[in-house]
Image (cartoon, rainbow, N blue to C red; front, side, top):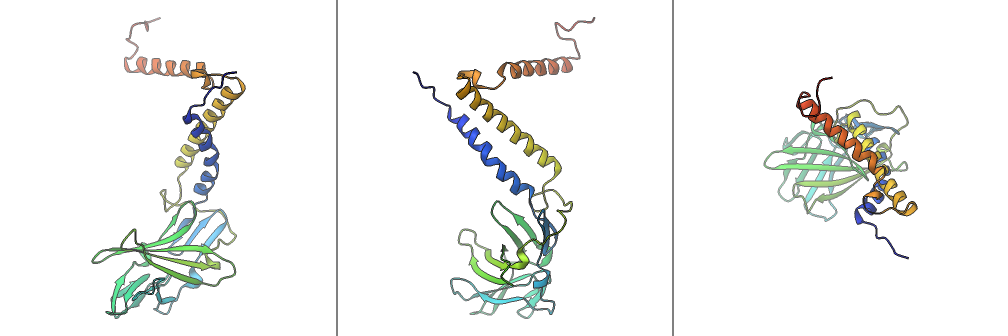
Length: 259
């Protein structure tokens, strides 16, 4: 008995079709930003408002990073604060150097953006003074925690980017209606057109990978016969080509005479 090898491309397509399903779920469950400290997804609303200090100072004030350096960090969700005799004036985040009493703006509430990726949700702030600095607060849901902010410090792979993690019950979505309509884009939700394109290509991938598997393992096909409905697609492509040629030549090509 001869053994027919399977082209690596077909294997990749088959694996990709299985991997695509959870990815679609993650994309479609984007937390759509509503304010500088609230966003909404299919599970409800994440609202950091209860953590906001409205007295003009930061809720999380002068916390040291994990390395124990001279740098300290302050953050206040939802409301701006001022620190360092105005060096950090009306900001959401501030970095200070205790050895030189120097303060650096890490962004205000207007710069806040909820950023979704495959594994986490985070709040990004940024400010440009002498350089551009970015503060990233990763949000971790824990119903047993009121609020704990751990400071990682400056990202060694991205100078000027400062990392911290909020663990809190307020980082958990509370039951409510699904997401409201937001602007398309990575931080404002995904548009209907993008959803339809994702579904279309997912369907094509599943159709092709499933069809190739059936043709190969069930019908023992080889070569071009491994493509499902090969004859139909070649005929259809030929008709589409003829249609374009007829349209662009306004019917004047040979073979398209008047009736």
